[in-house]
Length: 182
Image (cartoon, rainbow, N blue to C red; front, side, top):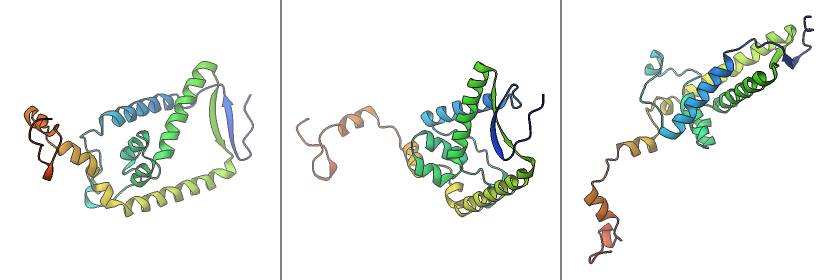
């Protein structure tokens, strides 16, 4: 029996999964975010060609933003891409949907009434254009290869053992080790 059309926006439990890959894609994405939160961003450049001439798209900064959010840096995530919290929440939601659906055989769906779809599409397009304008305003930040703190940490050479030993002693005037041992 066909379900009645929704009157507005409704959450319904369906007997079949109309988006079977969604949960697995979310799981893979969340696993990648967790790995990047621990080991850092990959050295691979995934930008489109317009990025190099200064044209940012709505997804620019999304990887750095979601990783910053996973590290608990909410303000940094918002600065890189205000959509970061939505993307992370969507990924977690899709994973929870997958787990519940696999256990119960019921799948949560969002249904929008046909007369509301045009309004929903217009609102989504306006949000996307607003995000695009925001990202373009942050082009200098988004064109930087890495955050300055990460770049500085990676550029610092490892200290040789003898020098490390010398710097572990108490320091005196002008940062020189105190004479006479520890």
